[in-house]
Amino acid sequence: MAKILNETIVKNLPWEDRPQGSFLPVWRYSKNPVINRNVNRTIERTFNSGFVPFGDGFVGVFRGDTYTGIYKLFVGRSKDGLHFDIDEEPIHFVDKNGKLLPDTKYSYDPRVVKLEDYYYVIFADQAFEVTVGIARTKDFKTFEKLEYPFIPNNRNGALFPRKINGKYYLLSRPSDNAASMFGNIFISESTDLEFWGHHRLITTQGWANWNGVKCGGGPIPIETDEGWLVITHGVLYNVNNVVYSMGAIVLDRDDPSKVIHKCENFLMTPQELYEVVGHTPNVVFPTNVLVGENGKMAIYYGAADCCTCLAFTTIDIIMDYIKEHDLIK
Ligand code: BMA
Image 1 (cartoon, rainbow, N blue to C red):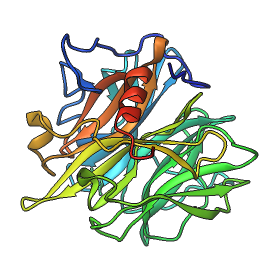
Image 2: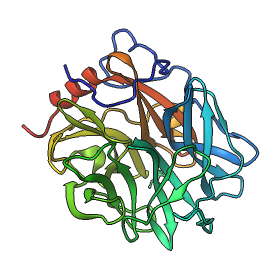
Image 3: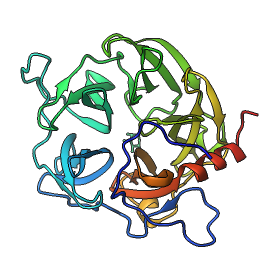
Image 4: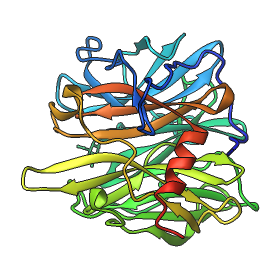
């Protein structure tokens, strides 16, 4: 029985029990999509976003694809994790002195994590070309942008929720400036969240067929007594095009550069209409997990680059499944 550690337990976690008779490790919310199109007067589609419990509800940093076709980050609030009120004005970042920074052309795929005294947002940002951006806030009103951890091109950053042996850790997936027909997961260390080094390869693409052309980190890693659970995305390239599935690896709790479990099976692959039809067909792209009582997990994912969806599992079901299909024996 794996135990989740050091996570905020969400009392009113969105939840549905596993359908009777299902043998699948992750099951979809029956009322998906949670957020459909024409979100507000600025945002046409929102997906691949990050949420945290905040106050008596939830706050999210959303990827919003606007009616101009540009994508930016927006703040949204919710009481129940299902209905969100999303700002029509994007986030404008300030520097460490509080001076407004020029907007970058586009920002996307934010993850949000509470780390020490701040909430950190880690996202893909157009800094000449695309790289991992990090910003922090206490109130989700003022966002201070930190130095970029890496030179372009890189994305899919996921910052660990605590220091491990005195160091901060960040996952990333070096890329090119387009749809990158490659993608491997790296981990980097820092003592101050400004200078990053000791870059180590965690895993290459192609550990299984469903991630033959790329794999990347997804949501913020979840600490358990058996290691760090990292939910990933993986991409298969077929004659039609790309297929984005959800997978998982587990990293050593004291040395997260060490992979201790690697699941050969995907956890979820596009099947529902809202996942197989859209701007980018056949995409499930997990970016956020909220944790409830008794190891319940609500996984938020983007579907077909069009809408925000929800799926569920428990830490026992997911860890048992990973170990049952483990490539590391
Ligand atoms: C990735 C990112 C994601 C997107 C996915 C599928 O490279 O751009 O934002 O969801 O492709 O199109």
